[in-house]
Image (cartoon, rainbow, N blue to C red):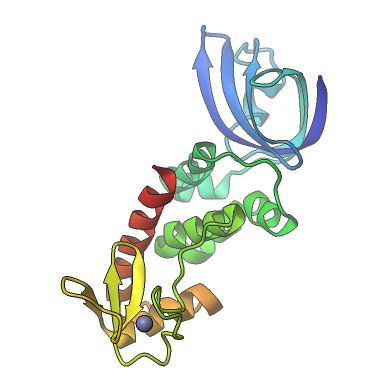
Length: 221
Ligand SMILES: [Zn+2]
């Protein structure tokens, strides 16, 4: 099978000195694990261009889970974010390899190929924002807007309660549910719906982080 597609390099792991295993997100075929033979030879044209975050046209040949890299024509190679936020940028790319993407929506593709822009835009809130985008793409978003039990819009609830990764209104709360301050809940809501970030108080971020972490565990296990 011969495969040609727009792609972004997610991870690169060197093997046998001169070669590497790369994970590539392709626009139309999901994630492909690929062997890039000889890529680390000094004379290889791809040595500097094929790195995590590089966007370009990929040419592969293979079957199912074993593909070989034929060629890669880069459109864009990340530089700035790599220097400023190397850890978070590489994390964001690697994070995708945990999921089974079959096809990528236009919207999500737009996010992934401009990931560097979003890392710079959201800075410390980037992981939360990003994970929510990934959940959305997978159709597994946490419900942050209505009571898990009675579906009441939580903006109308007097108090909001958290149990595991789910939110409840004051009528449906049970013993042991954690009360969320309404202001924190509203900050979470503004962030998720309108990308408005309240940097003054970050307690809302801690709560959102907790919800997302638990949600990830629930969908991943
Ligand atoms: Zn309720």
